[in-house]
Image (cartoon, each protein chain N blue to C red):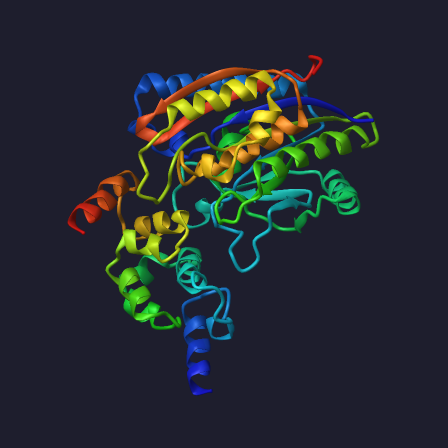
Length: 112
Length: 280
């Protein structure tokens, strides 16, 4: 119960429109998409990205999902089922120029 | 009896207003001229109300409750959604709509097998607001927004989109008051956003698609598979709006005003006008 209350307060503090503590687990791709969807709708999204470890802790994510979001790893996010539009938005929320995305993901694949 | 008086189709990418320098100036100028041609057609047709059909980019509709199709029912809507939080090149503003017409379509559809989702408040994103900014910056035309899920699979099939377009034409024809109705489809053609394919444009697919669209070849358009479309790009599914328009104007020819694979915009960009006066 205390964990739920903690999430509720945190959600409110981050200005999110929904309480993630009340979300059902959903499909395998649901929560990781939900993180980016919520983040991108927050008025202070860029600031939240700057301290994303704290932000991500509010969501029931697997370690693989947390890692992909924290690094971030664009190829892995896609592999985990994040919708491409949200991958792109998450990329831009990190202050990257939109037109640099193809090179960024190509570089990952080369390195990977 | 209302009259379907105009069909327009255009790519809707935001670069044409906020990242123009990424593309060759020649291509940007041609794209602009295409928009001018479409704007003239819209003004000349003088519709009483126009449906604007588009994908949405996971700004409003999310996988916690994703409809296949949705109509906005209100007298006014706002956009672009993106301008709420950043400089987008178009200021957030209001667009006049037509509640009675939207409500008519919903009620008829729910009675006749087209189970529309409904939203009564919607800040639409660039998919609608970029074309509207180029076609009707003063907001003189009433627009009813229509959403097709093109971003979060499973998506409605091309066959279903075509059929809904056919139903729209029939429902519009039964609407009272001798009104004139236009339809604008936005999105596509081949492109990818946020995927490993980003930057790839399938020009051969685009040209085949445009040939079929302009010839009024609904059988080919409706017969496209999810896989055929997805192979051309992660965001190419937006051509479903064009296919719905083709269904509404089934059999009628269209004029291709513009097509270029604009590498700087990562998109096969196209614009067409459907000749609503010609016999199918």
